[in-house]
Length: 257
Image (tube, rainbow, N blue to C red; front, side, top):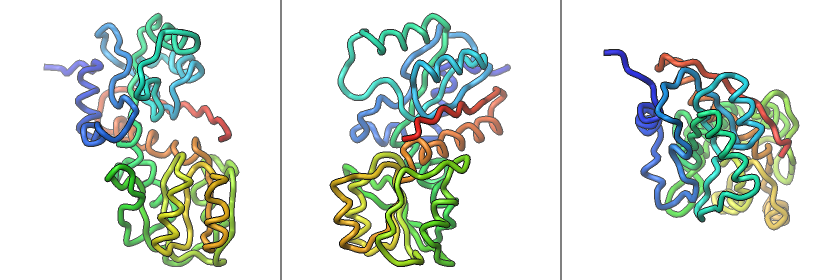
């Protein structure tokens, strides 16, 4: 019997790939299916970093029946159907487009995740989990062999050769150890300092940690929240395209942040 790829089928598939249940008490994102369709079969999946009216319009223009994102529409507290939130949901419902979101489980995944991809781009070896968050380590750390300059590290993690938000060369010219946590994790630089690492990479800079890194001699790169989190979404897309009889397309909608 031919399998129909509905939202229910795809939900089971994504849950088989990503540890959605394991982050249930940690992640304030509503991971999983956030907006359903009417039960129609899905022939094409669009993939994007953010759920926004712009990404919804792009998905619709490409003929996608489901949009898979890293940053969804629902974050802990319930929201009234007002303003932008109402307009976004109405757009999806009017066009029968489903929305699927995966946040921390996609950051942490050891093969498909944002941080695993960054570690691979850097050529990290002897990789270990790093960055404790509510009892779970979200990022990764490892050894750079051969060592890298901070400039070379920026080049390796750049998506589409876009510039980093901030580069802070506070330490040695060559980095032998490094930790990565994508997105908005500037304060985890303190954990990198505690562990005596040479380089810490995240998405966003943080004023509160600037002097701490400077005085400790920790090199830091703020690669951009968006640019450090395109990688996991794209890896999930690539996996889907090899395992499922559906089309897929990545929607590059950078924020510059």
